[in-house]
Length: 268
Image (cartoon, rainbow, N blue to C red; front, side, top):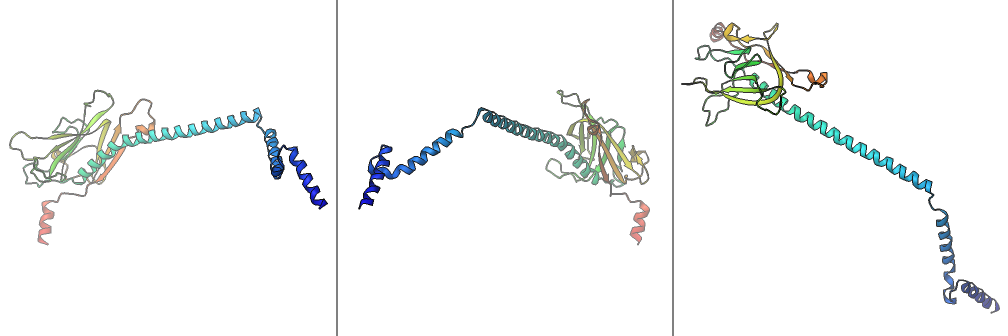
């Protein structure tokens, strides 16, 4: 009994040292632990140098993020500009390839004869040196054009109709659907693209590339292939790579048959 009373007296004395009643003396260890934590937090505070270093590191990270972000935006704008610039060229080449692949020679006994012309001057729309004109089977039948798929097409450079720019000329596709008009011949000039500095056409005869081809002037049949060189108008500070001409190569698979070949084929 004496030991028990001594223990009770010691607990009461500890409780009294914290100002707690004897019934809450069990909280003394927790209060002592909280006091130790507070003292450690006070001793572990950041110094001014540590704060300055943290701010400097944070600023460097922000600068790096800003640089990467704006570099990505600049790359996106450059890529978009390149795609926007190349889209008309790709569309023009696709149109020319389709027309040239459908090139054909009308029958020799037809009213408009056999005709393929490349070089100086087209007869339809005031063409200059950069002109190619031929018959092709790419015509579409419609209510406004109740003719066959055979039509005459020419590609020519004309002065630009856009007064806001002084660079280059316009590439125009001139289509003649009615090949046997009863009155004045009608043609439909179609705008293809602008900003073209020059265009060159070369025709392959099996051995050489020729800059001119005219079936009305003695050239027989169609060329075996046609090569188109297109040079876009650039700024004076453009790189040499940007000034390089773009090329389109189209093989011509349609060839005329002579009367001797037809007779031999019919007698076989």
